[in-house]
Length: 286
DNA sequence: CTTACATCCTGATTGC
DNA sequence: TGCAATCAGGATGTAA
Image 1 (cartoon, helix red, strand yellow):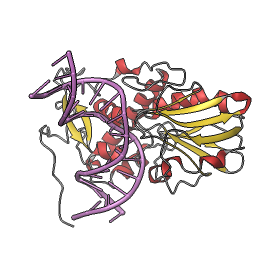
Image 2 (cartoon, rainbow, N blue to C red; image 1 turned 180 degrees about the vertical axis):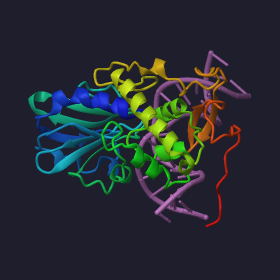
Image 3 (cartoon, protein in one colour; image 1 turned 120 degrees about the horizontal axis):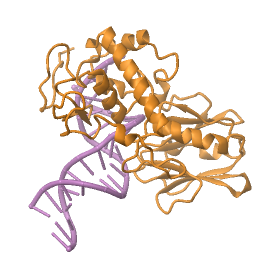
């Protein structure tokens, strides 16, 4: 589950290698034709001008006005060494160097669009501010949260309030800010929104400093694991005692994703929310 | 417009 | 032990 810190780690590794290089030929390998791998051949002959990141997407602007868009999905790896299996894309560079895209579960994407034209990628097209930029302000964050009645965790993971936060860091940030993952987004107070904004920034910064989180699949370009796993307080810790209060962390499903939180620390308003069954609240007729 | 949910895919884990 | 069923999850398409 590469999220912003993992993608940023990959970006930093790719940048010195790829910037200024010319793509001789980019082609699908063992991957079905379709929108996830659209227009790769258009990259042929274009020079890579930068290796940028937007949320969890890698964006490589090319010299003739196109842009290579890469999303690692769940299991995507970018590597200069030919993988032994699940090879989806091969990019031939000059001097016989190659960039390989391996992706066992095929949730990733690797395609070419006209620069800045993300209409075919709705999440990227409507993506919120970068969390580590000055655009991610408390005012804006609170304002956006007030527009949704969805559970705060589900809404954050849409990438609209802020870019790059997925399942792991959503759980971590909500735990740090002591906000219940099922709290309707619009009920989060300005003060709590600020705490959450700060928690998101802090946890992402700390994870980037550790080169991301590694467990089952993720490896950076050099094949090294990230070091942030041991610093996770919530994600994957259901059943363990809360580091703040000792209460056993609970696990529920929010937005179809496994969610770990402290039922004592993380509340909605003054009330503790009961854990367990699926939440059907807020289903008023329109 | 919004929110909910099925879907993709396959290695890892759990269950019998 | 061995095989089958279940789980995991980012983005997206579709339904309501």
